[in-house]
Structure formats: C-alpha cells, structure tokens
Image (tube, rainbow over the protein chains, first blue to last red):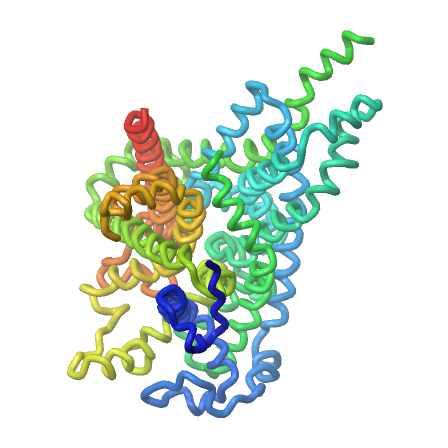
Length: 288
Length: 295
C-alpha cells in the first residue's frame, strides 16, 4: 500500500507505515542538512555584513542580509576576471574532450575487436594514474614550450585528463542506443561515420551534454595543476583566486564568501541538472 | 571493390580509436615515461647540470625520514578515508533506499560535498574549524560544556584526523550513490525469505545485503584507495600545508614541495615513481585477490 507523506503527517492516518516513512524522512533530512551545511553556510556568510562575523556564537541564519558583498567583491577583487578565465578554460577543455572521446567511445561500444578491448584497458589504467606522476614532466614540457602562465596549457592538460572519463561515459551512453538503427542505415548505403553523425549523436545528445558538463565541472574545480602552471595573477582561474584568500585577513569575510558563492554556484547548478546521468553512470558501471 | 571494403572494415576500429589513443599516449604515457626517466637524474630547475645518478635518488629517498613519515601519513589517511567513506556511504544509502519522502532532493543534498568546488569547500571548512570563531567549536561548547576548544588544524594530534574526516565528507557521496544503486538491485525476495526465517534487522544486513553489495564494495575500495592515496592534495595543502610538524604531509604533498619549493625535479620524480609503484601494486594485488575470491 503506497503511503504518501507530504511534509506533515495528518492524523488519524498515523499508522505504522506512515510513521516509519516520517521517521526515516526526518532522520535523513537532518543528516542531509548536516552534510550540506557548509555550502549553505557560505551563502549565509556571503549575505551578511562582516561586522557580524565575529559574533560568538556565530549565527546560523542571516541576521542582516544584504547584497553589499556582491558589489564590494566585484570592485575590490578580480573575481570577474577569474570567473571569465575559468569559464574559458572549462568550456574549451570540455569541448575538446568531447570531440576526442566520441570516436573512441563509439569504437569501443560498436566494435568488439582486440584493439578495442586493449584500448578500454588502457583507458581504465590511465584513469588510475596519480596526477603527481604527471605533474613534474608536464610542468617541464609546459616550460619548454613557453606555455607557462597561459590558459592554453590548462586547457590542454584538462582536456587530456578528461578524455578517459569522457570516453567511458560516452561508451555507456552509446551502449544504450540500439545498433539496429545504424545497421538499417548502413544497409541503405550509409557509411560508419555518417551513421555516427546522423543517427547516434542526435540520439545521444543529452548524454553528450552530461559528459561535457562533467568535464566542465572537473576543469572548473581543478587546483593543483593550475597553481603549478600559472603565476601571473592576470591569468588566474577561479580556484587559484579563491585559494589566495587563505591566510588573507585583509579582505572582508563576506566578500570572500560572496566570491566563493559566485565560484561555487555554476558547477552546482550544472551538476543538479545532470546528476541523474551521474547516478545512472555510476550505478550502471556496476553491471559492466 | 569488395576486397577494399573488407580491408577498410578491419581498419575502422583502429581509425576511430586513433584520436583518443593519441591523446592518451601524448598526454599520459609520454609524461609518465618522462617522469620515470627524470627520476634517474639529479635534476633541478635551478640551472644545475643534469647528472645521471641511476638509482641514487631512490636510495636517498629510502634513507630520508621525511619520506617514511609521509608514507605513514598516506597509508593512515588512505585507510581512514576508505573505511570511513564506505561506512558513511552505506549508512546513507540504506537510509535513502527505504521509503521516504523527497528522495531526489535529499539525494542531491547528500551529493553537494562532491559537487562543490574543492577550493571553496576547503575555504569554508577552514573557517568552520577555526579554534576561536569557528562554528564547530561553538556548537561543541554548547553541546558538551567544559570541552576545551580543540585546535582542529594546528594540533599535531588532531590534524590528520581532521583532514581525514573532511575527505570522508567529500567522498562519501560517491559511496552513497554506488551503494544506493547496488541496494536497488537487491532482490526483495531474498530479504523476505530471510525475514520469514526469523532474521532480525542486523542479520538481514549482514547475511543478505552486504554479500549482495560485495561487487560495489570492491569497486569502491579500489576507487577510494586510488583517490585518497594518489590524488589527495588540495584540501591538505590549503588547510595545513603538511600539517603541524609534518603530521599531515602525505606523499603527494611531499612530492609537490620537493618539486616546486626545493625545485628538485629528480627527487620529486623518484617520489612520484614510488607513488605510482605503490598504487599499481595495490591495484594489481587487489584485483587478483578479488578475482580469486570470486572464482
């Protein structure tokens, strides 16, 4: 018997099933609040003038909410520049990763040959590679090519790191599209490439968006490599910019939190949109 | 014409794999080989001549107490994060799997620690954990009167625990999602059968659910170990920079400091090679173990 609980349970339907549902929902909600609290707290701090910061005990709900921090942080820090750089780098890296992965993913999904199983093995192994191992040689290469302090280096590095993951995601997505459609088209004289382009890709469109979004989010939050390669503050991306606030007591706290909010909101919003792919992908990966 | 078609069909997979493999070869395999090569040299950014030292860097490493400390930190950190994330993820998944309202919203909330950029999460936690003004300590003082304000990030006996807990906060969502997916594929008949046989809650979990989730746990262990051993950097770097007296200086951090503070690329590459070796050894051993166990 399905019991729907909408917020408050109305008596007299207080039977054992709906009570169990209520308790479970309550416990889970409390835990969810605790887990998500830091993110919420950031928003609270961003909206609160910093005079209230040193209250002991600190406030949990905004006491005097104001948007002063927004204009202040824009005028006093380079947050807009950092966001612009982050958007540039993340978008380019995601687009390139998608473009490079589509072919490989299609091959592994459709062709069952030795080359494709070797390839998927290699992809899996590169995913397990600790980034430290690549850090020093990549830095040397970047230095030798004169690409240090350039966003291009970041774009290339992120796109390379993303390819294994993106390929894997796209492969799972392609697997869900029936081969029969391409076979029918090929009987009609369509080539493989056209089959991919005209049939598979349009059907996989939402999956492509999801995979691209993940690359975007990964690149957006990356710190280690960015910090290594970029020293010129004009080329800072968001993660470096925000990290610069550590140990920095000169900038007002509400501004720091507002900057943090501006940097955090885009990936979270994007993530909420594509999370069902994430969930499906992780869950589906178990069956593979 | 027919022969040409068949020949091109054989080459087609290779052609399609081309771009992807080229990227990986250039971007991952090539630097890896370079790193291994570099570890055999005394190489620095400070303009010294590169001198071949063979395994010299490695022997220096093994004799360095700081290396062994960082190895110990990495191992303890990895075990803590993996075990903690598995447990927390399992508990959350069990909660989310039952009948409750607003599952989608709650699940999204649980995923937030992973979705938020690491730098901002770290920034927030840095303040929450502040000894004097942080929310954590004030709530602690409110709940447990007489508790001395712990210095979460600067107390040598607490720092590693703190960063471990934070990483669990960050990684448990992954475990939650994967366990949730696994739970949803457990056949209800098995649970019903156990219940009929008189099994209590705990017994059902131990004898029906956990065995059914073994595949998930295996993958999770592999992922979590790889992540916390070889990737954990940003949070520790920003919060403690290696910690009070090196208590949070793990291998990754040591490698970074070696490479970009001391500018000793040869030594850093040797360190990185050690990390790679241990990670690979673990992966291989673990996969062999699970394959044998499941056979």
